[in-house]
Length: 430
Image 1 (spheres, one colour):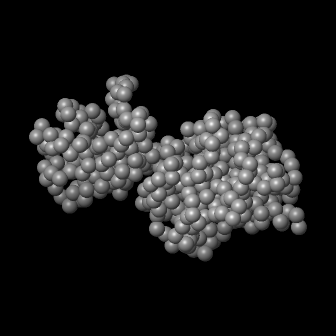
Image 2 (cartoon, rainbow, N blue to C red):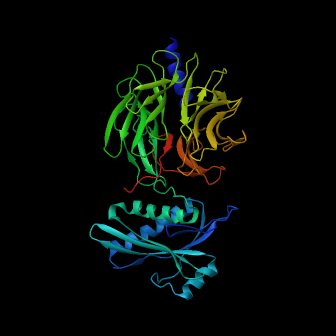
Image 3 (tube, rainbow, N blue to C red):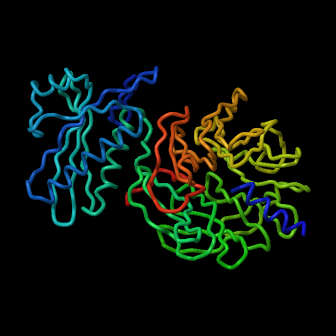
């Protein structure tokens, strides 16, 4: 009876300009002011229908990426001559407030689309950066995201997040199955068709695998789905709970909750499922672990204080200390920048809301308020956004917002309810 009680409880609980190698990077304002960037109409080498369609799609996707990254004020073109970048046209861009303009030439050759893209300094007319991208016509979105990420890198020194994806759980088939979608809500596809319960997906650091818990064989086992090889395997199948798995930054280890017929505690296992070390050992529930970016610490949830709170411990299970002192806490995730932890907390008589714990200061900032249940946050690869589930529209759906709580957008419209999203690293070319 005790094991049964905890099996139920655990799922309620979880549910300046710088130069390097001749590359030029433009510095964004230290005051976080957005940079004004123009996007010209893309010139088409051959004005056939397919080429025109690709050029329009590429421009629209890149514009949208630049808007969503929240680094830029995007200024659109009003010119009909995309191939003409003379001083007069640059003056028009300058009058509109643009300091840089993106322009491109698009060609379709057989099954491939070629994008020659460049950024011009509006004041001098000089080329800041140029690059050629090539991919299959069917992968035009991937090609555009690559270009967008490089534009962001030219301004910030860090790669953008356009080439990332989000995995989540949805029950529109009456079963909980895994789905994957681009960060901007496009290219939705279903990953599992088990007609079982699949929950709590998490990405591997290289973006090739997703680990998750499944009742495929009537026990909550930990599975791995390799997206590159399209293969699935069981990692951990101990009797009882094998849940809330999370990869170490090097991808070689996984921390998860195992019950093994006892109280749910945290274990460190290898990627093959072999137990390396038991990290916690007590008559309490320890769950929802997340590694620090340097792999030396783990944040987790424990009810050892009588109610679930955020705790930290070393990779060896030592130096345990408590971070929060109130509320009902759940699902912490450590920022890839290393300085913050986002988590869910329900205060007395309140809703489940998202909060950020700032590690250097110990300050806690509330991100959501009076928008029903907001749960299971994870970070974007650059640590500037979080994705989470929310019932603000009367069913659980997936949303994205900036870490100051602004710019909330629904990720995708899909039947049924959606839960437990996980944001990938920036992925390699499709």
